[in-house]
Image (cartoon, rainbow, N blue to C red; front, top):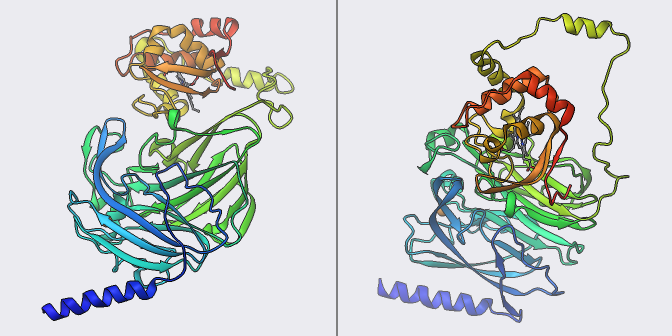
Length: 473
Ligand SMILES: [Cu+2]
């Protein structure tokens, strides 16, 4: 037994020294999302030493909702590793002593059984070392592959490794890193408090959360990605899964270039790019006009109801030839008045009481407001402000009429949280507007104001779009 161990030790030393060659040895620069290590300047291979740590820790998955994430390097997704085609990597995987679980790593950039999984299987408080050579350039996912594999991935154990081709990548102005992932919690979306992992929902692929970078709002509001007009952004976008493929889209942008599947084939002028679970793309786009660009999974209920929403905040000067904004809002009267009279003759729902307004208003709300402000009026952090118990709303219900009839843009604060976006004018009748607002003002701890149809008609005449000071749009 002792002899065996000795032989193993000698064998290991020998393997290490036989492997030592003339390559310069460097330490890998690892970054947490949304940051990316700097481009590689070398024109030769190196021996790159990577030191990564697995950590299990409780973090917020949404406002007021906690989840036990399992991570590479303390973030979801894990740290970004950038190497060069031909590099030899010495990978050290350490599992923090506080971990309850063993972990390992399967890097899709590895040629070898398990992508390093067996070689890197590491108990809490241990470090494993293995070597691999980066034979293929591309953008690769890595993930934990310890049983139950699905659970380790569902808890956030994935990240990206970029193997730059020998000739390097074309320079861009900014690079960012994000990954989509689906999450399964005992409670429904937004249910407060600590939520544990739900294996049954995971098996059914019935995700409560679909997220960019592991939390609702990880890339919105203050944490939005930033760029200036005229700059080109390269976004390294991966999908950890475990289950769902992503129909990745940036609203108001067209990707100039997409590395299809993160591989060597380049596609151009792409609207929506598919990112399979365990896959990634590098998407490049030049920003032509300022504003907020919303990143979504275009399986769109995931964006507005499960959290798959991020923002790129672009500053700079307008170019009306590329995008004018609204230049006119004219009354539209179809040819001949016959159409109009048919409309007039249609029986209308006219509310005769507050109870009527609440009933009709709820329907108007569900059809016109809920997609953004949510069924419970809680909004979406960083993107859509809450209407529930909203100080902004209750301070001035007349202003709220203007918001719905004429629209609102620019920075506002609602219950202490900042929003800087646009609410488009809603094309609703005076009656529907009064009902929707009465419903909102009499729900979710709001102040109980009743809005009349006449008040709405008056604001339609006298009010205008509210443009808050500091509006960048
Ligand atoms: Cu793991």
